[in-house]
Amino acid sequence: MKLKKLEISERVVQRLTEYLSILKEARKRDDEINSIELAKIMNTTSAQVRKDLSTFGEFGVRGKGYDIDNLIEIITKILGIDKINHVIIVGHGKMGEMLSSNVEVLGEGFKIVGIFDKDENKIGKIAENNLVIQDVRNVEEFVKNMKNEFNIKIDTAILAVIKEQAQFAAEELVKNGICAILNMTTYKLELNKNIKVVDMDISAKLQELNFWRINSPNEKI
Image 1 (tube, helix red, strand yellow):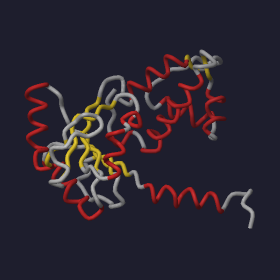
Image 2 (image 1 turned 90 degrees about the vertical axis):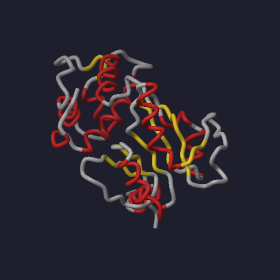
Image 3 (image 1 turned 90 degrees about the horizontal axis):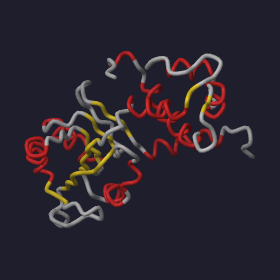
């Protein structure tokens, strides 16, 4: 299913990933679930749930709800994780190393196939997932070889370099065919609108969390 970027908001996609997580837990207990039950867990409204899902089609049965296994399969396809998506990591510092050594945190549908760094002391060493850390200058050649020799398209990268190198590294990735970047740095990348960037700024998330903590009705002063 291919949708135009203007047809769907980022928040809908975020909720879609949350629905998937909820459904996987729910199927341990039930075969079906309705929008009211989903809304209660999501702390939203049943109308919002139905609106989100109807963006991609009509999957439920009026008065009955959704078949959980079927909805999981549908959302999995919508998110494109019903197949393996090949990803490279650029930057093998503490964050990059954490990701490469704990690949389960990526979840289903993703496989790290290349790790790159500029540090000569790291290049040539084997990461915990048995991939050899390569020179970041070899990204272009690596991407071309994966396409030509294995028919594997590499267009997604996890950017885990230091903040000062983020913009330059991202621009180089784009030049080499990368069009989707998970930005693990605190730097706000400035790239062409056609390049999709998702920021994973832990500091910002902690600030957001702290706001809700100090403004909670249960907060004791």
